[in-house]
Image (cartoon, rainbow over all chains, first blue to last red; front, side, top):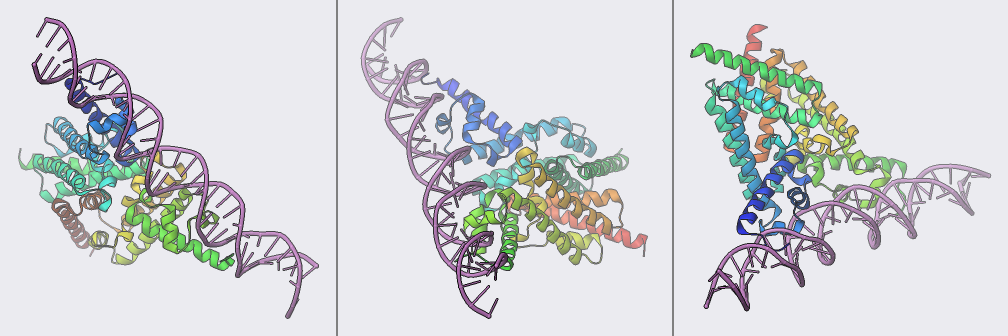
Length: 190
Length: 190
DNA sequence: TGTACATCAGTGAACGCGCGTTCACTGATGTAC
DNA sequence: TGTACATCAGTGAACGCGCGTTCACTGATGTAC
């Protein structure tokens, strides 16, 4: 096993990013080691540093990839541009590696634990998700913003409690609120 | 420096819990070491295990303490039982060691990273906060629940982004929604 | 109340472990002629 | 097109570090008489 071709190396780099995306979202940035990410690609630890300067450099690129994926998935799943659709997609049971990056990555960027570039990547991705959400919904800004924050909050609590009964009840209330917004929007602009 | 009296030992145990409460809420359970907690009490590492079986045992007791404190603070600050008051108190700028336990402790209990007793302590504390919130507000269950989830979500995003502009805007929308709920409640039952 | 001994809270060094990162090495790929 | 050499992607052991936990030890406190 010697040197890989440039084409193969580029593919391997993508594979590292994809593995990191799955693992970091599923279990959190701080609970996944570089060695684990590399093992998931079928490679060994040392080679990582031929592709990335540090773990945090990988984290930054993974943030961009994850938010981009979430954005695309959300765009596709809510083509009808209705609040109810977007909420339903967001609350759909997903495999761990599709967990919401807003929640999965928050611990790593909270406070001054992480470096500024990484926080900025999170900030940019989160703002993108919010912007798309607001852009697609015709309802009043206030209630749409509240809805967005509520989705994130309820999802966080559900994940932390292993879907406790009261957390599921929160989700239901949010689904109802979204349905209400959708109905109002439809009757306002038919 | 030899053996401490039983009274002193009991005080020291409380001190460990109080220090853990401050440090864990400010920086997260997983970013604070046992040695750091002990240093904050003025003691050395080894003595910790005379009081707690393990770090996770301390974590569990700290959860109970933190949620109890949050509950009491919230009860006092929102004596008027109005949504606007509760939201304002929740969004008030606080020192890091008074950070919301729902958010600060979520990473540690998320998924199967932690043991079941610890998750249960979080679950119980979170449910208590939600129950008090719902109990005090006469507004429709649906919008009150949405409001609660939104507060947590907006606070999480604000903490993660270092109070990004759009996160502050989310908070404002939630404050407006709370004011709206308060007004509706007042006009419904004067 | 005083004395002799047992207890055990607190000390601080040491242990084992997993982590992020480094490094000497290998050999297929890339390049110069 | 073929040959000789340089490059560098990937290997896997090693390094330094911080963590949770253990342990032999100290000496003031607690207890038995």
